[in-house]
Image 1 (cartoon, rainbow, N blue to C red):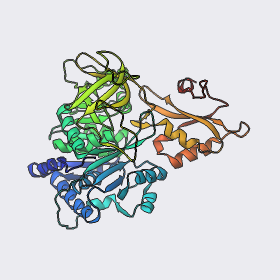
Image 2 (image 1 turned 135 degrees about the vertical axis):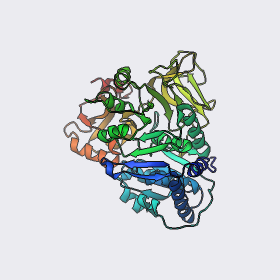
Image 3 (image 1 turned 60 degrees about the horizontal axis):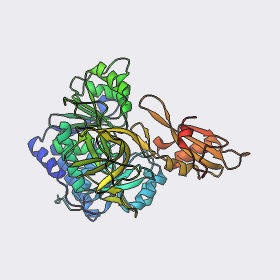
Image 4 (image 1 turned 180 degrees about the vertical axis):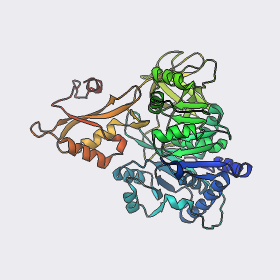
Length: 491
């Protein structure tokens, strides 16, 4: 697997020289008076100090795990890890101790940076070197060291038709996706990005850290979705770019009183389909076109629909970014490409492609160098991609992806569960929740719902825990005993 020094750090150094007093990052909580900020020169120095401390403790190529909610220290920790030549493994602060322990073992984690998270205690017990996320901003003097080779980004993929895996993306991948996003979306040093998505997620880190740092755009970080804070920052904060998910756009479109968006020029959606009705309601209220973006953890952000283009279509996720090839292939015969407007399996090759899966011996799902995404789509005559469905099982929950197979494997550990299937239940045009349907091993002793919920909460991240549990005598199956998920969803 290829790793090297990362050009993104040179961009940071350039901003520190060209605009030393401009704000690089702000972090805001529900109380506006709690906002803290860091300038480009302060960020550059903080990254250098933190990297020097990491170099003293960890060899180049070691894996540093970060488990924290969004905060001002988060981008410092990420950039410092890369300056120190480390593999930075960003995991959700919502993961359970069981999940984090397994991921740490699979990725051979050597040290961790931890904030408030469900797994903080388990990390402290299982990893010998652990630093508090707050300590990343310590200002004690230290000898600066030059950037080392070995920088890489590890992220947890939700999986397509199988279980979640750990993806490794090299410095080459990080630089390529950063450059391509800035060019396609148009980030500039005058832009103010409102970043509500977790930086532990591929979409969150790319649009809340990689593209803004590459371009020199200012970023306001939020920790999760708080509608009052979101609307305040769109108005008084003067956000110009908002990367978000369909559920947030639906919330904004349906507010009793519309938010003020005096400077918003780019709002785009990813992580799931954007219904036409939501697009039109948002436009009617704010007179800003919501565009769509498409990507995957394994390849990064790869297509973007330019809302200013004459041929813009709100249903499309846009044209390939620079360095990206998109093919539509026959789902049954992936080596055969399909023609214009034919629906098939979306396959992607990009300069930002991943190196491979960590701790996984399976061959990569590539055909002629193209990654099989698990999504269904079609290309029009202009090369624009429209996503029409999916081959994979993932359920979109608030912009996060839940793999039903993972949840089912946990619930089947309950001694009273016979079979189990996890399906989505629709809450609104854009929002889904997770439902678990189980059958009892012994019909006379069905599993208790509170026990199933407790097991799920213990073993899974909060967003993966089913909202609804149901016990049935039997589930619809094929002649070979395979559960028919679509029939469960329909009942």
